Length: 354
Image (cartoon, rainbow, N blue to C red; front, side, top):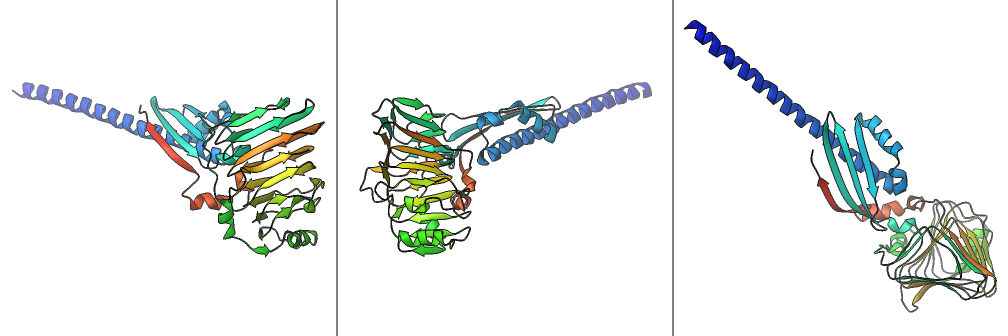
């Protein structure tokens, strides 16, 4: 009887031991899966943060990024992929293997800040046309329009990408910065005199209740972190060229009116033009019909209305190079997006499991 009892007890102990091992294994698999999930999620969040800091899709898809994350997270296998199906939408995928357990996270977002990646963008249509055989249009950077981009140039150095129906968001920056104004001038000339006499401090938000002639600012150095709000139009004196390549700080002009330049030479560096054309009395928010136009490390944005680029004089050229500045280089702009609930919209999030 005792032998039978001992045999039964042994069988029971073996069964319990096997069950315990199975439970331990199942628990370990669960823990490994959870860790793989957290690491995959960390990879996706890393990619998102880098996009917001201005990194490109190509930069994030480098194998060196995978190696960096593997080293930081301590995993044997990690694959991060970033895709850009449109100018503002991104698909972020991170697959992780941790202790032979796989986990894959896919996150789709739309960046509110995609506008600032463009060298030139229009809220409606963009028309780039020339009528002379020896006229050159050269654009380094992306161009986009929420309407249609029409290009009819005799000689064109192609932009990095061209997109119609871009669905870009153009924020109402004039109203946003109006609450931050530190200096107000009733006349454009008063602002120019203050610039000449070095009376504009760094970090100032300047309101000009007038139009502003850009040629009056020729060869003046802008203080750092200055934003200029213009209630009227950005204009120029007849036949007066606009030349300012000495400023090493970004000069940001936000105008409620239009930005029209005709039959002069323009040579600028470190300028960003944000043209709201709020009254909509003129279909062309931005009209550039020049002998020559050269803007280095800058950008042109037409919020309401079209952008028309014409070179009807020969020889002539239109050159725009966006450079490498980032949206958070523009003073206080990060605060705008933080006040709007963040920098992106979440389109979808998926856990594809083990």
